Length: 409
Image (tube, rainbow, N blue to C red; front, top):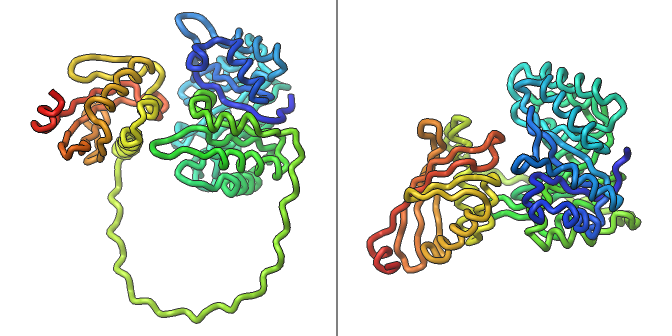
């Protein structure tokens, strides 16, 4: 089935309207979506199962009844390629999906993973011989050479590169570069790009940027475009609104041709004094780099003053232990962080002092300066989820200066 128009990836069904399929489908219809891509498997396991109930069939039926195409996707790890492929085939057939997307990332940059990728794809294609299959992975093949792009793409019909312009503001330029780099691979497949509709740390795309992304996709002759991810976009109402109001079916006017620019005489080069080369950047272990990455994201979220930004860094059932008390799940975490930012750290400025590892945990050391000049210092031990992107377990401890304790008493 050919994809046309706008779509969203839906990661965790229960985070959208509490998992109500009718409300999700109605919102998709109102937003003018043509398709929704639902996570149906994670490795060898079924996904979006809550309290023993599979939330996917009801949502598939609700979307289809409103004329919206339900697609599925699976994150794969390559640990057991055959069973991962079998899980995908079973889910596609049981759920009656219209298409399927394989989400493969860092695990396949390890040595000898091209053979694993090919084995997975061969079994997947054998089980779904005439079915639309796409690959969702890195936007720039040249920057991720160890990844076996061809081993995946030779069994696909579509290419779903992740055009996440995090920290930048040039989605159209990044989309063009991605398309150009994929054209150098074999086979060349139709591109359905995925744009950024989520925030990371203190960065967030603007409504004008998501519109620029959609306009660039249309003007490049692409049939469809997606965004990551439903719930984060819905919370950021300005992004949801901008994407909803974009009319994919409307004609895209041709880009104006700029007038010719007269040649400019190049100035004579001015000799510059020799510059002392910068000190070499210390080499970090992958774990230490992961600690630095999550540390920077966590500190940026704290400095935003938004409990939502902090909670977005946790998996849906992530757990926080602080002062001997545990809290788990987005609702409890949001309530606790809202109180912490309001009562203990109002308008505080946080700074990451160190990031490393301790036993099986990532270790962060940080400080905070309160609005009244008092200070705090904390040490966190963090374990990430299986994807390495979200916090699964977080042990937090901090102490306030004595003057700050008196002020809060």
